[in-house]
Length: 434
Ligand code: URA
Image 1: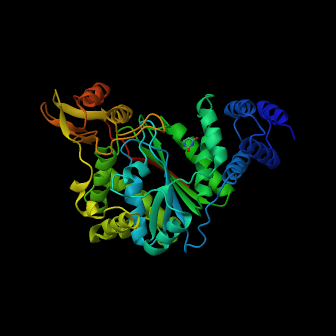
Image 2: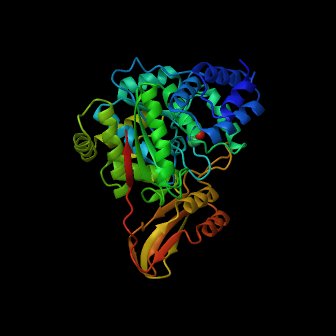
Image 3: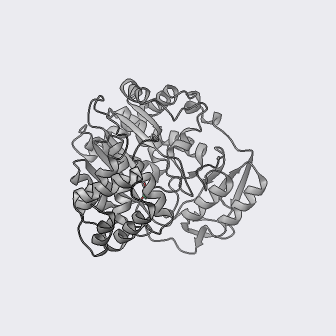
């Protein structure tokens, strides 16, 4: 088999065989297929696409390119959750302890933030001493003991995806749907999931900017799931404005704790219940979404969801007092209020601008090597649709350095759109695909 023939076949719109796909992923992972041939292939896929069968084969080949986690020693159906990323998206911090408290084992690997979209692992490190690196045995034992563990992704998982993603990033081929879908799904499969709940974000602060693109990606991933025998459900949710009120690591942790206690923002609570209840269905714990939702609401109200987070923090070396007294979490030195200049209604809050401003402030990173400031970020006081009077506080900026605060304020210029009339309703969840 020759890579040049595989490139030519795809360039001409042909369908690659399972063997050809396995050959190219194996060769690329081992280094016998060079970057330039892989780039040409990725561009051919960008223009010609892949059939569902090819995409399924690519996913399995990438999932099998490195270590795979075997979760079979944990009882029950293991349901994983993945978000395509957004601003203020702390849903995993809520959903993982919540569904674990309901009885679904959660053995989850999460990522760090990169660019304007945050990452669960950074957020968890807001708890002093919280360990995100665990041995496989520690990780599994914790799930057996308390039902939940969230750790950073193991270095040896899906090396083919790691290489290919870096290559796509510099060859203008990130946007090919079969490549995005197989990249995400290969990581979930290698992490051992039996069933997968995907939160596909759409809007200004998301990877997918419009509903059509988000639906295409969601459909591709659900189809891969059925091809490879992992039941997959995709929730397409809004990311035009930040989720909840808080953006920034420790600030988001605090909001997640409030949400676990049943006192969270409406949008975050609704999304956590929509995702969590479907995870209970996928895990075979309840027959339908309504039953799941009622169960999760009860768990929030009883204090068991907060308790589960405290157990997880303690088990991973953190200080559980920070769960019950969140004022112990990292706090910024400077508070700066952004004031409304006119009366009206919030027509929109540009999630992408808020995300960029959070990076400028130090809450996020532009390169993988950058350090971050866990304390800084924003707390919104108004969301889309809210009435505003001149002089009202729109958001509080939590900063540690005056010069970064000034740069963040520049980034935020125009992020709040105040209009004379209330905006049309915008759904939080656009579509559920399964
Ligand atoms: N996230 C991934 O993990 N892979 C992609 O290709 C795009 C987003």
